[in-house]
Length: 116
Image 1 (tube, rainbow, N blue to C red):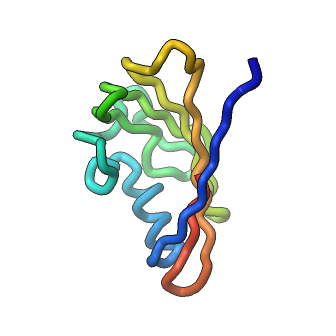
Image 2: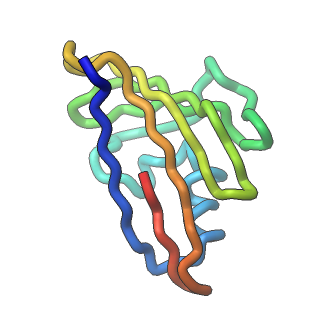
């Protein structure tokens, strides 16, 4: 079976630096801004960041997925790109793995795009 992928791009009324701060520097605090995430915090299995990231991963309780183990797999602050994997207790059996990459692009001084 071929891997299934999806992507989306949104425009955010904030500078690329502000968006990057939330996504990368505050990676473990996703519960503060993402609907459906009940709680989040540092992942004790990944205490060290990679390639300059502040965090190696996070754990979270997410509606529908339950407890998640999220680990950063690539981090590039210069190009505003962050990739991670997700393991969760309630991933449907037909899903082999979940990976995601965020790329932030400046569209202007107070506008940016996020591609995932």
